[in-house]
Image (cartoon, rainbow, N blue to C red; front, side, top):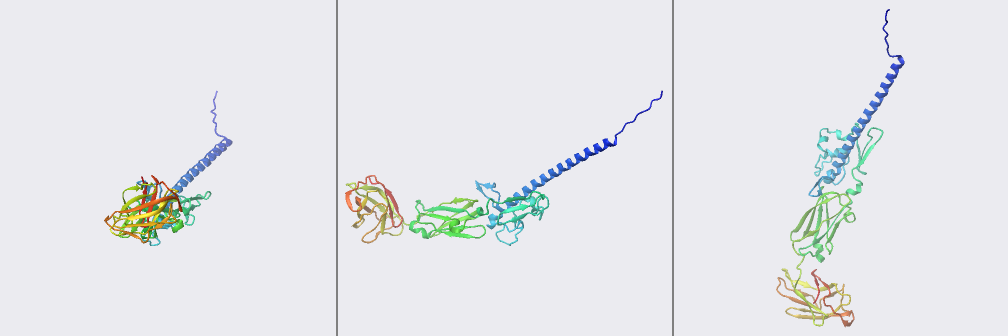
Length: 375
């Protein structure tokens, strides 16, 4: 009995099914590869755009001693670049350009920084502060170098200026100058008010740009203080100055105030430690009790002067030294007594006022101030 071998194979239908499955798997694999590649190109482009933004306005995370130190192109030029080439080339021949501003990996390709990972060019709009690219052609990509371009310039620097005894300049404010120097050679100037307050702001100077700036306070005689100030977006930075010398020949209080026997007046003793005579022409009660109006002023040194005032000055009022100004000798040569007597409860008289332990704050016309509580 003979046996015949039986051979089996794939039918045409089976081959078609296999080919169909292979085709489907290939399509899925290609799409997965394309998606993975697209994602990698997207991530690379995002990183490049972020680096371009840092090159323009700096990386806020780079700090030293708690202060931001990186402000990129803007920090040197006080403006955004006209185009991306300015990040790598000094196209305007500016002496303040200190680039290139891009990180080292970009320097390997002198033109590649202008193109995204797909090879499409980046576009930059200085007016809006945006960097854009068409990306993969389906989903354009855009980033802002700052939340608002106005935040780069609409900032303020404010502060106060005092002397060695923490006194404001008063009527000497016109002799004090505050100078702000920007890295691009621009400078601003202002003076403090009588209370020592100064300001550089959008209101006074059109706004202060971000960056690391030099701030100088000066006064006659070569007395100056230099400080460096870091201005960040949307900021109001406070910088105070305190000079080592007095603004003027301030008078000094000697001893403690003396209450008069009737508790309706008091006496203070002062000296002039300065090198020049000090002329006193008026005194103001910056602070005084509500019901306390002075009637008589006595001044005593080598001479005695007295004057009656009507109406009587009280809180907030200034009164002139009568009949003429009084000159206090320099170098502490003499102790001068100022006696404020006969305080009444009203400007026109009536009952006397008990001023025991009441606060009086006196300001002389030269800027000297004394706060006393007679006891």
